[in-house]
Image 1: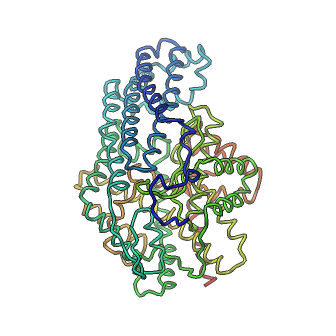
Image 2 (image 1 turned 180 degrees about the horizontal axis):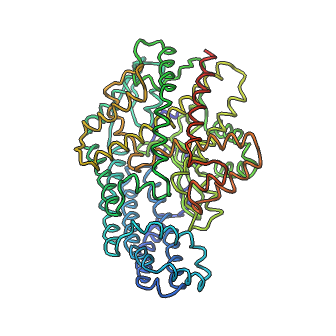
Image 3 (image 1 turned 90 degrees about the vertical axis):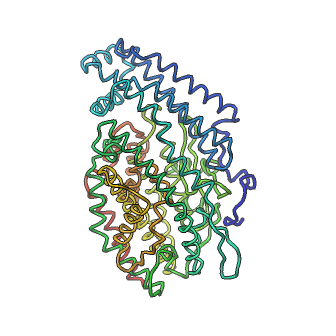
Length: 600
């Protein structure tokens, strides 16, 4: 099977697609539950004005909220995943719109709750919990509501903000439709004159080609396309920034960043100290960039030279079956139970494997409570694809454990810890591959892959995080933001992070235009913090064995959101409230860089 051939959705073998029928056997069942979700809005609204009356009434409201959470996740996940498998299908575009409408409707219907609960004296809340033992389950939920008291509005204001949700949530969907369905890239030609349709899905594969002319064609073809759409994309992104600013101001936060980080009770110092630590270690990545220039033997290193392997003689192609087998062996240190769950996912169509026309780019894991998690891939058969499989199955098994262990009330782990389990799997995979090669050339190749992965996960994501920080700060300061301003901000960051050996081609100024994560605001910094925590966990697992696995699975993977993210990690043995894990991870990069230099 040639993974580079762009097929239509109906040309993909069923066994290589995810089994969405495990969630809904038919679309009609989804439509029934979508309507049920809308009806639940009326049911929960009936609790308005009753929450202070008795512990039983408050308990009834929380139970109804759990019921809404159950159906909301199922309705949203199914609609979006059906849409993502082929974004041009109008039926599922409509499902996404219906799901969002229902979600907004229930949010508006529940908007009375926080102000009403906050109006209850804390002494009375304590009495109600004593009257109704069932409220004990919701004690943490109540504490979180009380913690948000300074940012909770009046009932009328909360309802108005909730109703504004549908109007303000359009940027991500508009960008997704443009980036996945409507944008068309040129066709380029390889050295033999063969025509290759350029897509977001095959761009990185083409950028790894040994043919520098092909890399340049792909680079210029992609970014010139974005440049032509630049004013439109800038408008879409600034709508997202404006929405963030609106929500932050409405909730009396000093900034959008403060608002997003408060969700997990994460100090803003964690974000700033990450950027500071990475800036302090930029000389190491600059040294690595210089090494890349030297090994490629080029007079000038361009941005289209960033992905091509610099260990020329060792490149592997993997079938999906081979990738699964490698991941199973690499994750054996996680124990029999973990591996059995991994096999279950491999054998029972949790995964949508290959790229097809109009399929969402990238990769992710997602799922709804009560159903196994799902993984979207665009498998290309290279080593990155093997690491992506390990990464996304880390997310999936985290979700599996969390849903299995926690009631729906506390099953959804927060974004701050979302990348830890996935990146821990990548660390274990790298260790396995290095331990099981006797070929010096392959060892250099793997070390280089680690350096590239680290650069992409820590340095690159921190650069993205700094871009978001600068953009939002300028917007909040009232500075005008245009395509040109955004391009300049991005250009300056690329120059800072890559250093003096890199030619910062003007096309790269547009790279921010293609990053979907910018529509999940202040998310990307957590790739870097998550990588740091994952590095610590993988070391403990390899060194301590079962006791470390039990602590990691029992206190972290099974924890959901039963504690604050930092407390979950601390209970499992890693303290992210200090800069030490980030500093340690950056030191690991420098250690691998020295190893690589010594083997040249």
